[in-house]
Image (cartoon, rainbow, N blue to C red; front, side, top):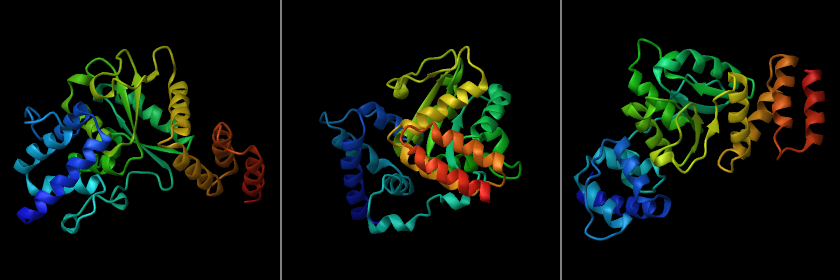
Length: 270
């Protein structure tokens, strides 16, 4: 990348982050890329802060950030971003949820994954979804850059993991919905503003239902999720599967119940 191109792109990144994020969110986003955030800006401005940090960062990282933020510049086409089609672990046509969790809790997370599928939600669970022959970090990145939302299972030890914090940083940078699941740990740091879903005293099925209710009602996800669920009903392999998904759809407050009758008739005919 030419020097002038880098200056132009950094300027555009600075303006974009100034509009979309707070200082602490910018720090979290940069940290997910391994960018040091101990810099003191010459002026109290997020735009200036970004402009003074990024010139020292490698060109490929600057280009990746710009592409992720949706910035339009000819130089951005020189990198190959992760495409959704390359992430083969998602169930086709499903809503894509990345579950950030500790490895010690993997058995319960595996059950949660299966419960969420009843709602048309495909979950990325690293210990199950990464093939042994592949580089696990590459697969996690594919999941992070193609997910529709992120669910963070907060429990003692979660904040001590570098990986979980980086996963949250990517979600913040991409401005996707973050769902904190409170399992004896409250939301903290960059996700402290989210109330989270209380999982203590609830079984896995109740937690799955809580996640479904958040996804189906949040402005960032409800439209896409509603459309996804309608398509899945029409493509159901069995009547029971279609009815199960239809019941989930009917619980969505933004859905016209009259349409459910039409979908029921179509599903039964098929």
